[in-house]
Length: 235
Image 1 (cartoon, helix red, strand yellow):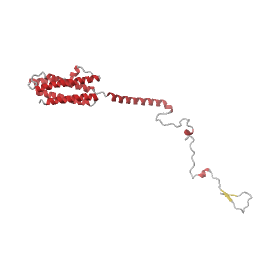
Image 2 (cartoon, one colour):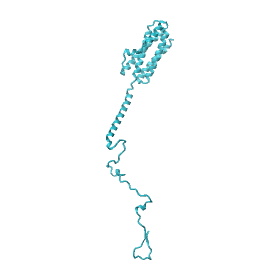
Image 3 (cartoon, helix red, strand yellow):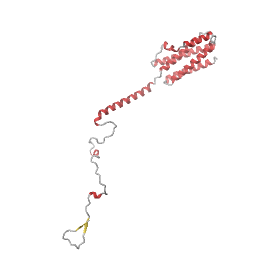
């Protein structure tokens, strides 16, 4: 504060003091200087048409990397398309494992062969003969339906392929049993083994089958259960 004493004033009069003018720095606490807003911080509000105003992050290269951006978009679209096509194909086709169905038909062919040969055996009991005839009819019917199913799925079978599991050693075993007057118990043992194996591969094939294939194999399993029951009553 400085006294306001103009020249020529009476020294006996009371002096009036006027406050000093403060600088802008004195209006703020010590060591604190007002920070002016950056002129470009709000440029996108004042001038929305300016380049970069309101720009959003897209996760893709900008500006000079536009070619790379296009490449990434194309690659991403192709990957997504491949995934969708793969999922759609699996859902719509659900194609079964036809190799397992072929193996089932071959097992059926072996059982049919054994049953037919048994009916020519003179020492065959009436019970075993009835079983052999029933087995031949049941398995032939099931095999016909199975071959038809395979053809509908693009798989054809010829006689050579069907007979690949016909065992010469099993035929020799039954021939030797007939010579030894022991054909009936050996025949029942062989047929029990063959039907059990047939059921096992049929159950395995059901795992990857669609509704139609599963229904077909389920009916064949039921028929083989009846045959095993009939075979058991002949013991």
